[in-house]
Length: 225
Image (cartoon, rainbow, N blue to C red):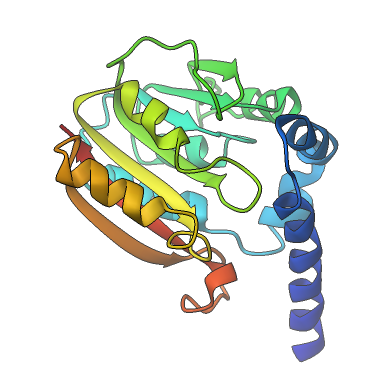
């Protein structure tokens, strides 16, 4: 059992090193374009990934379920599936990788209906073509981490949320302080842009030590003012 656990740790580390090494939007597209078809079978399922479940649970603790909700960096649609299981009716997704979006597009509810109402391709480091104040819920998991999008991306995510929207934004715990995410969230709270900020620590994998930075996520939960 110890050997199996060690092998899983090695596989996880190798996959994460590749993800954390991306430096540009093109790097991101190339990596996830190659990885999309096997992302779940090679990574999330064997590694016991539960960050998607954590995200959905935290959104639904304070959300009516009517939507619409924006899944920011939706990837293959894992968070969307978890949201639908919990009764969220209308979900849109946005991601930089067309191949990952294709996987998300294939996700269906128990009645065969698509999990996502709409899926959009965009670089989340820049402005996105969505009107302001559209969404009553915003979620993001796996975007704010090594080599992906910096804290500046939070502004655009908040822009598309309507007043009173519930926000649940996960940040890799190893960079939450060092890369300025805590400062950014606290500044938004101090300026009255968001209210009720609560940062929760959650393990990213079933077998993970929540105190190990590379195995945990700090999740900012708030209401958009």
